[in-house]
Length: 182
Image 1: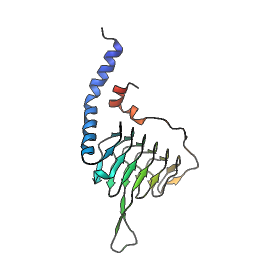
Image 2: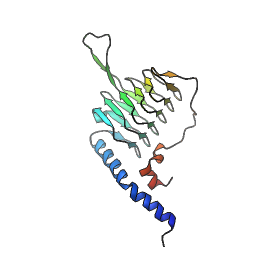
Image 3: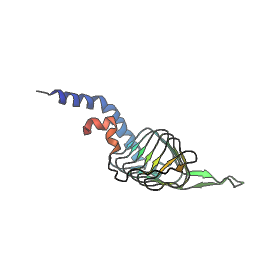
Image 4: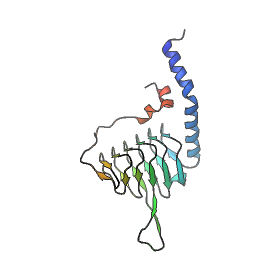
């Protein structure tokens, strides 16, 4: 009556169901607070310091445990991967100000970008389409499309990423994979 494949598929779905429910609960909670999340975008438990309504994420993006400092808008595109431990800072202080005046600038991360573990993106930075930010990089300047920036301070290396990007990072997330069957 039931094939072995059918049993395995449904066993995987049952085991992954609590994680999927928590993911959907977190997503709904954030959207109720004004965050805009595209279809099939996964946002792991993260710290949102500031107004959640300042965060906008496109479709099919996978975002790990990130520290969002939301003093200005953060725009994240489609099919973006942001690994655990990344910090996105939209505000800082002027170092030449005797009153330690604060400033805020938006951050933009274009489609298919990949921000590796522990990277820090500073106020006003734009990460171009398909760009890669290396693990632990501190990015204070824009990174062009398909560029690869590494180090502290981040510098562009003399290598470009493939420009024919067509992947869905969400398919690797276990609770979705159990239902999508990839």
